[in-house]
Length: 491
Image (tube, rainbow, N blue to C red; front, side, top):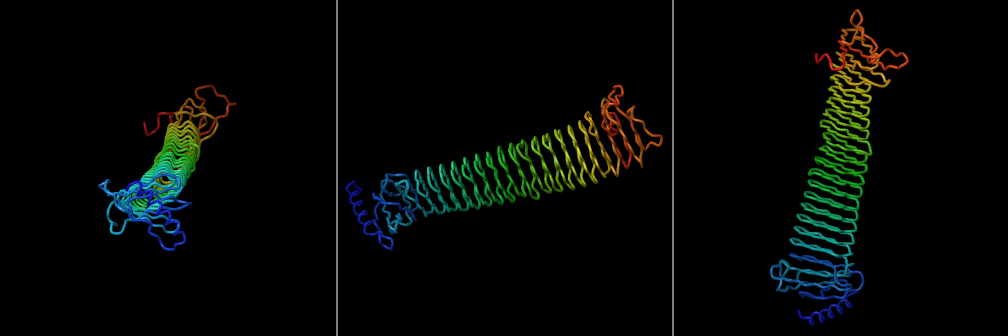
């Protein structure tokens, strides 16, 4: 179209707009391959039924321009219908050309709202300050540099959304989506898909089914309800509430209060703040937690933890628990479970029925309450309180200092204890229904062999004014007290 033709169309459209302000029915303004239209006031542009390549970008203030060509031959112009419907301008296929793929390019004032209802198309939208709404199927959609809300309703589509300052909402199925640098609330309601979210400054509110979700650098609160698929959240900065069903979770370099209800695997690394995991069958693997307490409640699963600085509480049944290097108070309350704790640097309390307990290298108070399981504590450097009702209890100290006393009792089976002979302590041992054996010179066994007692002064002269802790040992079966490194099981 010549420049003169453009001017003629401009005059015609301007006159049509002036006469159509009060019209109740949509008014067909033109069926041309292109045109320029002067706008007045707030209006919305709709693109409906066009398929092919659609490009909408920021243009001159107060002016709409459009041009349409064949999709596979950009030199061949094709008409489109321009309608006025109240305050809405609508571009649609010209009569008889509804199924022909087009290349439609439109420039509009930045503040104009836009709405797309299209299928089988590539849609690019950029540089606008008005609301953007897109609905359709089988779209390749790119939305970039928008200073307004974006609403998407899609299926079987690929979405790339970059630099949107306001809220974004997506509803759809079979979505491959990328969301980068969103400033407002991101709401996702998606069935089946692959969603990536990066540098989100607003909150994330997601309801997902069979979706692979990956988030990185999430600055505000995260709320996710998901079934199936998986979730990976890196750099979650302001906490999260996650309700997951058959959805494995990876949480890394996160901060804030995080609550997780799940029946699937949870892995966390470098979390700062309180962390709670609840659920049946929820396996937990994690390390480097600081700045808050860790609480785990599960059943029928593994729990593997390392380098936890905060207080830790583990509850459940049929668990396989292994905690290494805990720096905060550790409490385990389980049934039908196996519990192992290595290199705990603060107090440890374990209550376990119908399962074994092993604690290695603890430096502070250890308390164990066990029924129908074996108990083995070794490498201890602090006091121990053991109450057991099981086949065997074994306690091994490598150092013993301070004034806190220890007590070891097994109401059903044998007890084996070893103490470093350079320690200062009093030992009282009783086996009313068994025998007491010892290789420690200072420990005197009674004539009937049911008890033994004595003072260890660490090889130094007796110092009555120095308060010595007491180690009291009781066994329903036999009781063995030996110098460190000489447990009966090793002799």
